[in-house]
Length: 127
Image (cartoon, rainbow, N blue to C red; front, side):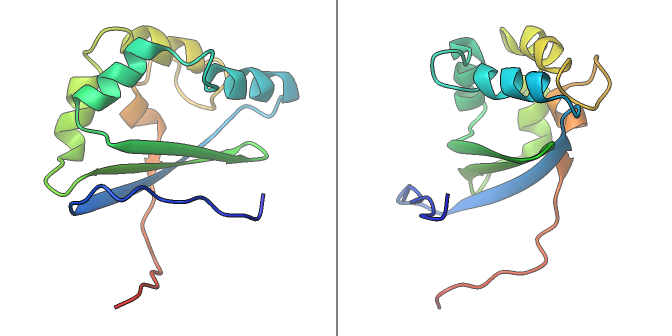
């Protein structure tokens, strides 16, 4: 896809987090992982938990086995507090156990333990 993706204007200052993770190198597992994230299959209680902790928008991209997740949140969002709370919300533990079969990670890890935070090394912007 080369058209790009329009970003939502939230009308207030936000901050962005980017993380990465590897999936198991198995075409069928990757297909099933992608399916678990499509609209008809994604679990509404997991989405509700993300909204409850303050996540405004989330995107996950894939190339090969590499995932990149982009999360937009309010400027005062505290990542560590939000992820600790998210891990306790309904459906989250079951979701993490389910998706662990597709991921190169500890099967008992929380989402925050699986995804590795990326450091921005370049940013071009319009002043």
